[in-house]
Image (tube, rainbow, N blue to C red; front, side, top):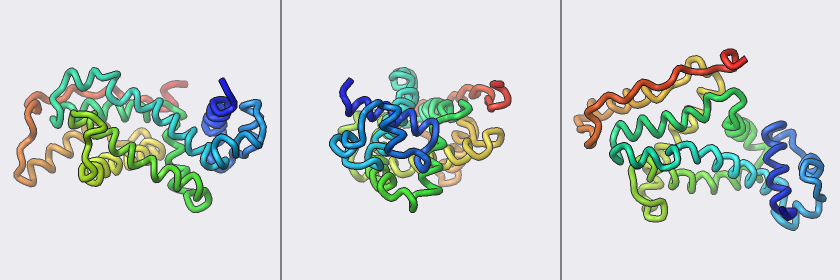
Length: 216
């Protein structure tokens, strides 16, 4: 790997160990065995590098959201079954003790003290909203219209941030995919709407929750 890749991998390790606020440029240089000048040359700033490192971590987690495409092959796009299955997978990435999603909460809590990181991630969040839509509704990411990003995408990202907060704060009482799906079903029913095709069968019960105590 070159210095750019070394810096990114080093920054990811630092984030997972120390978080955003406690990671210094020298920490990254030491971890990546590069030099301070390389950060500015390849990324422009430490904050930009940390933002890219976080995005890379999240992209690794998001590979599990649709189970390598198996979700798309097994459930109807836009159905409650698809909704349940995708959110089961997403929540599964939050169940693991020490889940990297806690870094999102650090940004929320300390955003004003990390303006460079926050600004970079705010731009990336929109692309995240675009990327999650095809997993739930079908189609291709490049075909998602801006209106859908501003509505469906933001709706899904709002659910995501709420779940991250719950699973970070208190995993034992955090919302699971069964509860989330049932809530959506009731909202649809209360508005007089009908559930999309493929929603007749009750979604399978989600796995039992694992907490830090369970894994010790």
